[in-house]
Image (cartoon, rainbow, N blue to C red; front, side, top):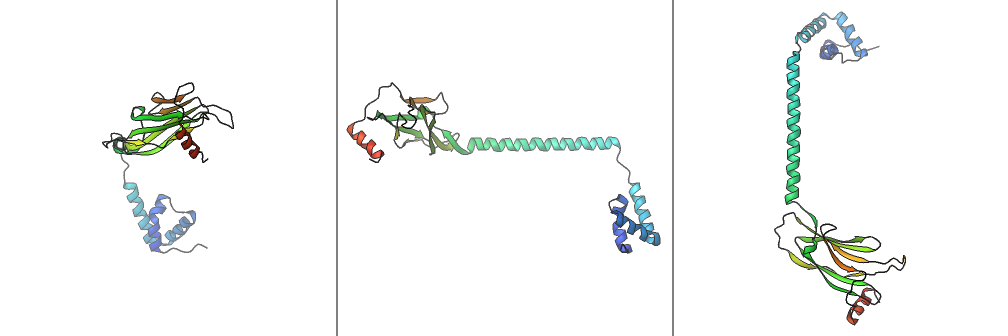
Length: 220
């Protein structure tokens, strides 16, 4: 049996009851109370008249309001896009990130070949900011050497010459028997390169002192 509701609870529920938001069991309890309570029936009648007395907005007014809302959404969307573009632009202009060092700012020195065919070389570069990373990649037959500097796009920092650690590259892979045919310094893109060594190129042979340094490098 459903609990009986008092007038205070029923009158609190009447707005939702009129809107059809109450459950079936609650509706039943309200209706049972209304059947025996004249005061609550009068309250219901008054609320119903007040609700029906609210006139719906004319169609023209509704369409006008819709247009205003669409315009507001459009203005908000454009504003967000403008702010995002400004933030991205500010980061692009003033933020710091990695940039490849162009070939024009790099110098290759100490290129020579050891008795076992290993190529030695050293890279010096004019750096703004600081060197963030150095990479060597390529394919089975070539090696690409790149330097990245961390700075702003239009950095006002004074550039300084940095000499990177020496590099040794064996031209033959003992496991695969594949042969290296070229070593390159790459700057901004593939068209911005310095040839460090290519197969058939005449380069100095390592001196006795350089051979000793190479043996120390190998840990012998």
